[in-house]
Length: 224
Image (cartoon, rainbow, N blue to C red; front, side):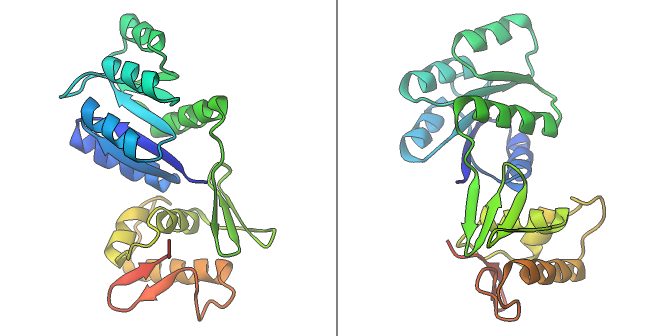
């Protein structure tokens, strides 16, 4: 089961960077710049957790949190540059499940998200691709009950495909998504090697893949 996060933030650079990071960690991220758009998304889409900035161009995080908690049983984590006691207490009084001040370490945010999901009971994160089961909570993948020992880049690549099911991903997009995860430059030849290695681990017939399909002249696709 994929975990769907709504990021309510009006700083475009933060939205871009945080969305890319969270997507790489196995989350599906939707963003909104203000309270009205956030509530519209919540009424239309499945969302499991809200990351909410206190300072918004339209509305503010406190009023948005109050509205979200009034209408939905939804865990909320505040993201804000305000580290003062008043803001923290106000957030918790409105029902926020956690509060983290900017700038924050990305890994700390992931830990906070997982903790809130665990406390609120939203911990199911198993995704199925054919006979492959990916547990994004544990960071593991198994096939027919046997664990697949994926490298960091192979696992990251698999998550990118999972989070873009049904979408044709160009080689450029894939390179942008996995670049530097292992602390080194990933070039086009390296991408070819890692796709080959990943197919060898998850496909029944790597030469005739049924999970990661090649779309000639365009890139690769994992079907929805």
